[in-house]
Amino acid sequence: MRFLRRSEPTTVGADSVDTSESQGSADSTRTAGKGRPTPKRREAEAKRRGPAPPPPRTQREASKLARANRPAPAERRRAAAERREGMAAGDEKFLMPRDRGPMKAYVRDVVDSRPHIMGLFMPLAVVVLISVLIPFPAIQQYLSLFSLIALATMIVEGTLLGYSTTRKARARFPEATVNALGTGWYAFTRASQLRRLRIPKPRVARGANP
Image (tube, rainbow, N blue to C red; front, top):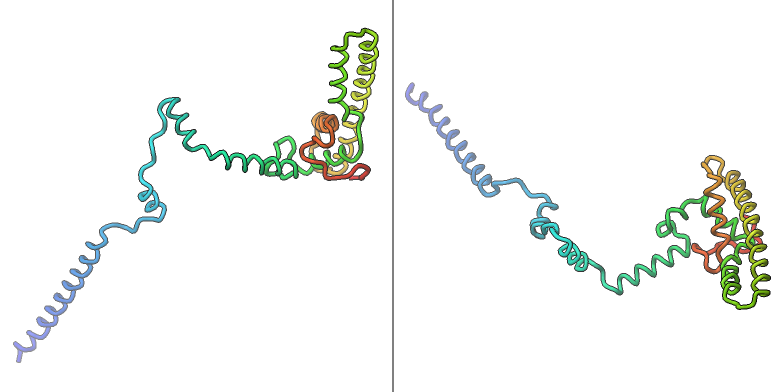
């Protein structure tokens, strides 16, 4: 009876040992099947793409790589047309840094709301060129005098426009820092262009009160 009692725990111990050994072998089988952590998606995609190409070592290789990565002519034309349309429409994404911001848009509206003598600056340049080429001294004198008077008038008008535009911008944006010289020059250059050639295109009609 004592032998039987002693043999019972021995048998149970053997069963537990066998069970632990089977579990250990199963775990080792599962570990052996994996052997490494699951790779991340970024690493897997990089492995499929292969190693990154070496950087160009010479100017010729850099030029060749730039030509290879250059978009197609049709794509470049489409991008250029989209950029021109965006600039003409006043889209902030396509505008130059000097044209961005609500304050610059307001200055453009103030300038575009009425005609300016400065808008004749380009035709005046043509008149000056003609006065130089015409071989008649009398006509040259009259054209030169007209050009000087028109230029002086444009300077006076530009000064007054810059002052009034800066005052309106400061009243419209009291919390912003409005530089008088920069704002006045921006208004002057905008007004000196022909209306149909201004970029961005005018969005207010003449006679409006922005």
